[in-house]
Image: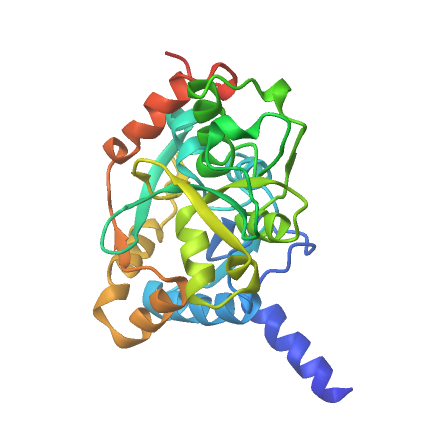
Length: 287
């Protein structure tokens, strides 16, 4: 019993559990994110939090929620100071957001969206045009690769969403892969970086699915803050992220995320997402 209490106390000190109420006066930096693909998410975030705290010089708390909308609501209400979101909500709410840093994957601040299907004999989905009468899994209503791309590509293929048998949100790219692997969906619209990283980590859902289509390259999901936020440690956080690729501990953390590093980036990285969003009437991004 004492050992259990000690473990709980340790986790409480290094990771903000989703159900814990937030304190408005809490010092340090609070960073919001949706569930990542790591099997040991709490352990990893504890290590990353300690690393950033030592580098930035203030307490770091990670706040996990299941959707981008919940994270954005917390960011706009200043319950958190920064958030790791997706390129689509960045361009949709660009007037209210400031770019903090952009992760780099395989050396570039970009990634692709994939269409995946179950790996099984006789699978008939070879592309977007084959989804009539089929079930399609999305990730999140504010996900570029997990929703927006699908809307644009279905339109290009001449397929109306109403012609699909059913669509559903799995609330996370890893969940999309698992839903397709379990054949709860005939196909899934997924972040290619996530699928590739799951493959690298030997996750079963990837061995049971396969990629049938890859998109153009898009700006990688960025870390942002609310525009006008003047947190005293904002610049220190940016420098800590930029410096991760230059020291051993930082490289080990990046390796766990299958990332190369971070760059300060620029809004121009998200132009392909802007263009795509303007082609989707329900995206909320005006022409």
